[in-house]
Image: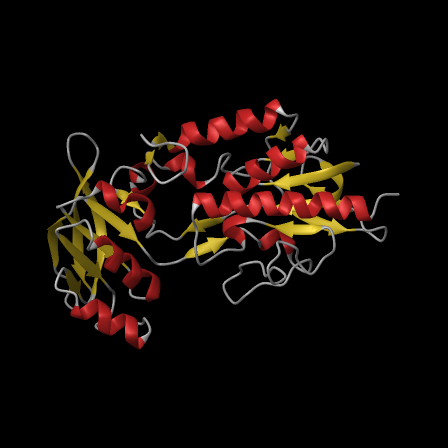
Length: 309
């Protein structure tokens, strides 16, 4: 019987592991299908405190892993398929091949950005293809970029990118944006944002270094194609929280994000906590995920103290 099982190994998971390990709870981490989380697919991270010269995403996650293991956290490279709460209040965690028992669970499984599904998409992530303007916008100063999407998130990304890029093309499948009225007005009034209506990106074009240099646009009304020169593509068509294995144990919003108790990381199930992007659709930053990982660890420690047998 484990005191704490942490599901997920991104910023939230590793921070929770550091705190619970230092509290002598000997946490067990279950890595999931993407050990290290989304930062392992990024290049340089400039906005994580303590790294004034920036740090590569994979290196940051390796350092977090080493710090967690230094204090006694254990990692099993497994993907959780289901969690069951038993009558005595403990949890049974199934990975298919094995099952684990725990008194508390911290879910830090993150959210996966939606992509277009084009052939070379995965290989271009971090090489001119991203889903986070806040993370990567500053790398594309005085060059043209594009945002794919038409909702509030796409408009917010486009507006943020105008601080850096020379031109921001906003590519949308329809001829009107589906964002809120105020966001639409603000977006269309910005002279650096150029809407591209009734179109979709059908191909990513790369240079000799393998970096994005342009996208092929397909007009959905007449089927014509053209090449649009951009240095980066920001995909803003939503995220999918990795919460499907928790059905019945947590409440979720309409998009699948786990609902936490107000001001807490606790869920509706006692002993089950959620941290990071699996519950946060607003900030979606490494540092806020780490903060929630800390909070979940402290709450789990307090829960165990209050329910000690």
